[in-house]
Image (cartoon, rainbow, N blue to C red; front, side, top):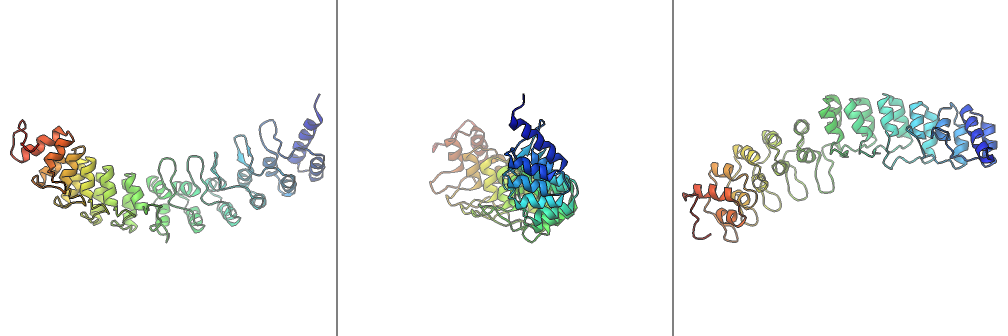
Length: 370
């Protein structure tokens, strides 16, 4: 036999679906649970969102229904209201402090509106302060979705509402990258024309260009350079995009930056150049790109080390390229060590052989100073 609370819940569910305000109010006064769900896990608020009037919805909210509860497989009441294209319900829910700041496990209200090409709903959501930068649990935002979809009207509205082009999803992809890689060139162009777009920085001073370089996204880098991103900008450590490319072995990205007249021999705060960075990481092909662009072999960092010393002291992967470009082997750093000494100290047999050949020793003989 059903308990009175079960009867109240069942009656309340039916009254809400039917939009019977007086019955709903009476049941709530009789302490029916406004947070109850039906047998499918759908909240009463979700059902109320389907009604043309907001009266039943307001009664449930007044009775302390949780506006942030999610229905099984359907998301929040706000998402339901957006799908139903019910602007008055959207307004009521947002004014009731529906949370749009936390990450959502389902598409956000703004994403749903963009997906439906419902620009009027995007405007309503923004008007009543839906969080323009709300992310899903995979890091996606409405701007990313609009960019990938090529919805330029939505992109413009979201940018005007200060949507961040800087945010990344779990794959490290920004909205601009999403547009470029989906060949949505008009959406990408809209973002690149935004006055804040090229100037936005993260806490380390990295720009959109540096972010794309570090993720080795060649098409995105070229698109940003075409939008007049500065190829010689620096972060707070004095690192340039070309140094970032050298650090990740991005030879095609490095080539794009060189073509854009990036300063090949610029130094970071530690005195390293892009060629030194490539040498340090052992990226032979990237070093070759930089050498073709006339990167200096003689430059030294603040420890007095040349690119060849750094290559010999680490992986040694770029030693051959540097020696092929006639890097000097008879130089010493501030500790009095030569490239050969560094190769020996680090046990880089390949670097030792290559340097010995370059200085005229046999591969079996080791100079006495070692």
